[in-house]
Every structure is written in structure tokens, then in C-alpha cells.
Image (cartoon, rainbow, N blue to C red; front, side):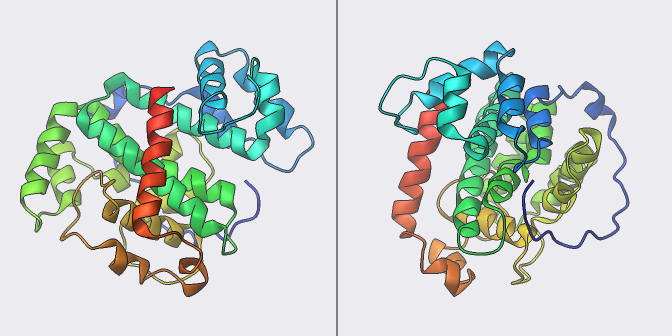
Length: 286
């Protein structure tokens, strides 16, 4: 995964698997395998390219995005090999994981699931921005942002209508406890569901902390989970919330929580929000 400062993994009792999870569709194997290809090895880019090429869905999505304004190469990209050479390992893997999440969500792309998708991409973009100015690996930060809410995606996929109703109730009641509402509706909240999926899908153990503890209070430590907490809060404040968690806070309030070494490099909230909207729009249109 590259160099990162991970949060110390604390012992957490594994959540009991709800029966509904037996019918949960599997996450795309290409994306799962991509997450376990280590950066830095001479064979990394070739291995990732060979993983994508046989899968027509992933290959087509990668080529569409490589030829979009998001990437803006000066010439048309006509093959996965060409895309891989121009994009490089880190950027290509980020695209594969992002496409994997969208592909997974497309099985049930309701308004609730779309809100989860937009929140995940926004969080990933903010996390990558933060990681440019601290010791966290940028590639890992982006992936952590994309996957931190995978438990919420799972709940919304298991029963889209129940989750949509839950979000509507929370929108009208700022005092509502989103995690408690999830436990009442599904027998597990999305943090527990995320931890369960990281274990089931055999993802790197660093994601256990990120998926299960991203709603805990800020610690002001420089680690990957704290980067995701900040990213999640700012994504919400910028208008990319998946669900309401308590009373909303302004982007200015959230940015005040960022380390000064990071905050001084970030664009204004309005500019950052517009940039995120453009990138989400390009990926959705691809």
C-alpha cells in the first residue's frame, strides 16, 4: 500500500453477521485484487494492467474515463496498456477502485445509494488533498476515503427502500442517531457492517479501523483514520452528505479543525466543492 501512518488497531469484537448479508452481492473481484497489489514493485503496473484487460466492463470504464475531461490527455487512448502507461500505477489503481465501487452500487442505484456514492468520492478527494501535506500515503488516503462507508453502501443495497426511509427520517430530525436507526432496521450499523465486509473480502487490515471508527470524535493525531474523519466531515459540509449525523456544521467550522499545515494549502470551500462536483459528474457520465 505504500508508506502510511495507520491508527493503532484496537481489539474490537467482530460483529455478528446479519442473515441479510448472505444475499449481499460480491464486490467486483478486479477491484478487490487491485487493492492487494503493492505499489513500488517493478511488476506492479504490469500486474494491474493484466488484471484489468480481461474484464470488458472494467476495461471499457477505464478507457472512457481516460478519454474524458477528467484526465484530458492530448490524444485518444485506445487500449488499457496505453492508459496504464500514461496514468501510472497509483492513478490507475485509484480509477479501478472507484469504478469498482460504482459498479457495485449500480446493482441498486437508488437515490440513497447515489448519495453514498457521491459522499464516498468527495471524501476520497478531500482525503487525498489532506495527504499531500502530511505523512499519510496519498494513494492509501484516497482508497480509504472511497471505502470508509462501504458498510453503508451494503445496507442500502440489502434493502434500498428501508434505507431510503431511514434517511428521510434523519433528514427531518437532526437529533436522530443514524447508527442507532441502522441497528434497529438492520441489526447492525454501517460501521459494524464495514468491519464485517473488510474481514469477509480479506482487505488489508488497515481498513478495519477506517470503516468501523470514522464517526468517532476527532483526535487531532496524524493518522489515516483521522484523515478520513476530517474528510467525511468536510464532504458533508460541502453538500455531499450520505446521511445526517447530528446538527450540520459549516465548512468553515470543519476546516478550523484541520492542521494549519494542511488548511493553508486547500482551496476555498466553494472552489473545492465545485471541483468535486465536476469529477463526480465526469465519472457518472463515463
